[in-house]
Length: 206
Image 1 (spheres, rainbow, N blue to C red):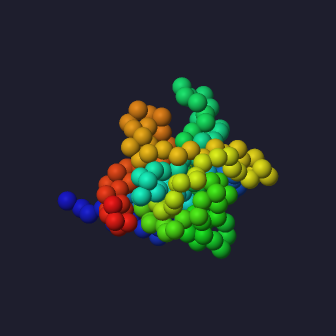
Image 2 (image 1 turned 30 degrees about the vertical axis):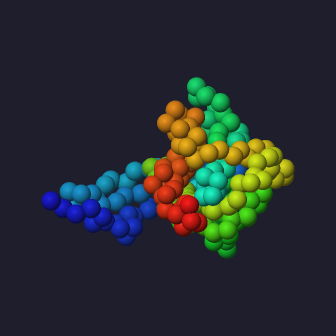
Image 3 (image 1 turned 60 degrees about the vertical axis):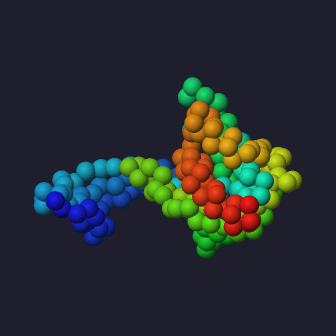
């Protein structure tokens, strides 16, 4: 039985690359070949790649009050589904050149929810949809006080309109069970919280 990860980026050869669209996002077309598991090479084929850049997402959590902050905002990609296109999500933002994920997390916490994180705990990094986009998400849990959290936020010049909601951790997890929360970053972070909630509360003496 062979082991996984026998190939690397050096086993991919890009014959040609062309930017076919440049707007709010970018789309590239690639002509490429790569090694195959049977020892041969794939014939040259084409793929379109959505270039979005990396992002950072944070689940704000208050271990004392056992509450989370989730943001409600309009998402174009949810139109046409049998649901509202206003989703409950994490604090999130695109990583700008020269910024660390932690810096993005703290900036977006202020801009999108008026929150200052006491500390950030890394959950994971994950590829959003590697069959078609290059985006990587850096996912964190940010410890905060939710005592005065909530309200309307967002950067008007970025056309953001955000309502910050405070929920008990139990209610937020129940919203995964019944499908009210159905975006990957929030699901991953809240399931991580299920596994780590007792530890986080123990660390503050609860």
